[in-house]
Length: 176
Image 1: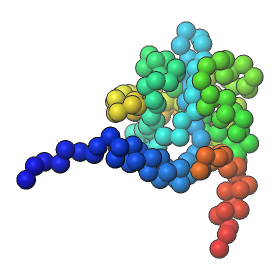
Image 2 (image 1 turned 180 degrees about the vertical axis):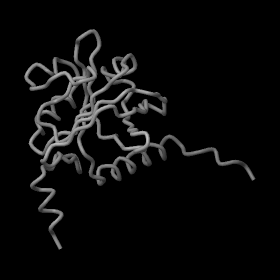
Image 3 (image 1 turned 120 degrees about the vertical axis):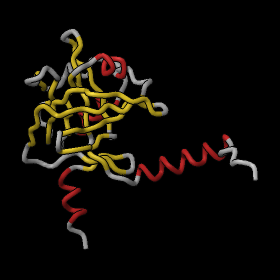
Image 4 (image 1 turned 30 degrees about the vertical axis):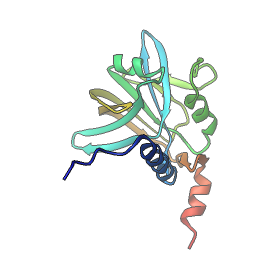
């Protein structure tokens, strides 16, 4: 029996579209990953963020290698992970775009470990990058958390191409 030659390009394109459709149906928090290189802040929105371990406290996030911020993250030692609040859809839109000074009209401060931290976020982590792995078109960054803080308001959620605020999340959760 001949080994499976793998999917044809047409089948691969269909599979890619099907996988995207599945991911669009999976709600995620909206995070902005930030770093500072030579006192210049950089950042981008990501939804591929996850806890890995509590002992030691470890998280990961994934960034497309074609992103303009990717090179800065490759050069960084410390990052800020800003889990946006329910009322920060406008902030998410700024960081989801490419180019420009994303911090110009934003309220933010430098965290204890040097990473830019977005004011008003539902939660913030500062983390030290421990490892980077290239996987397909993305780099997976593994980080040890060195500082964590959470606010008392709901996070912004991304589902089916739209932002859902905390009030909508609470309403959905209360449906029978």
